[in-house]
Image 1 (cartoon, rainbow, N blue to C red):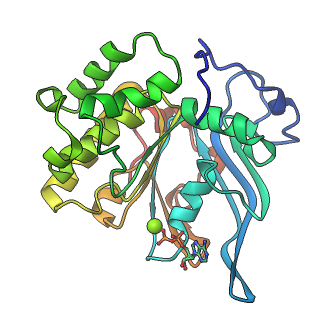
Image 2: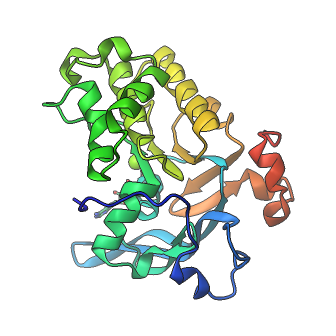
Length: 276
Ligand SMILES: Nc1ncnc2c1ncn2[C@@H]1O[C@H](COP(=O)(O)OP(=O)(O)O)[C@@H](O)[C@H]1O
Ligand SMILES: [Mg+2]
C-alpha cells in the first residue's frame, strides 16, 4: 500500500511530461490525452512458448472521454485495463497517464499515482468483506490522508443511493448494491480515470443497467475519463466512443470510423455531443 500522501490541489505538469518526446500531447499545461499507449506489446510465457496478448497497440484517450471496449473473451481487454492501471507492465512500448510515463516509474510512484488518479471497478466487486459499505468507501481516502474522508464517503454513498445501507457488510448486500459501493469507492479520491472491467457482468440486466447508469451519471457529474469494458453491446453503444478488440489488436474504433480520429473536436466529446 502507498504511504499517506497529501492531495495535490491542482494537477501539475509532471517532470516526465517534458521528456514525453514529440507527442501530439506536448502543449504546456493540461494534457490533451489522459491515456496514451504507444506500440504497447504484451507477451506472456505459456510453457516454453511466448504468447502475444497485445500486439503493438497504439491508443490515445482524451481527458473526459467515455470509451467502451468490447471484444470476445480472451481478446486482451482485462490485460489492457491492467496495463493502463499500472497493475501490470508491458513487454515493450510506452504508456502515459496524464502525461506521465508509467512504464519507467518506480513501484512507489506508481502506487501513489494509482491511488490518486485511478479508480477501478471490477466484475466481482472486490469489496473488503470485514468492512461495512461506508468503511469500504473510506479506505482509499484514508490511504490518501483526506481530512474530509467521512463526510465525503457519506456523500458518495448518497450519490449511489445507498445511505440506508452504509453500515451493512458486503455479505448483507445484493450484487447490484455491492457494485454500487465499489463505484462509490472508485470515485473516492476524485480520480482522473475510472477503469471498469465488466462491472455489470455479474448482474442481471435490470441491475446491470442501473449500475451502468449510475456509473455514467457519476462520471458526468464528477468528471473523469471513463474506460468501460463490457460484453453488452447495447451498453457499449452508449459510450462516446466504442473500441473493439480482437486477438490483441484494435479491430475497430468508432472515433477512427467517424473519419475524425485525432481531429475529433474534444469539446464535442466533453459535451457528450459525439455519440453513435
Ligand atoms: N498471465 C498470463 N499467462 C498466460 N496467459 C495469459 C495471462 N494473462 C492473460 N492471458 C491470456 O491472454 C489472453 C487475453 O486475456 P484477457 O486480457 O484476460 O482477455 P479478456 O479480458 O478480453 O477476456 C487470453 O487468451 C488469456 O488466456
Ligand atoms: Mg477480462
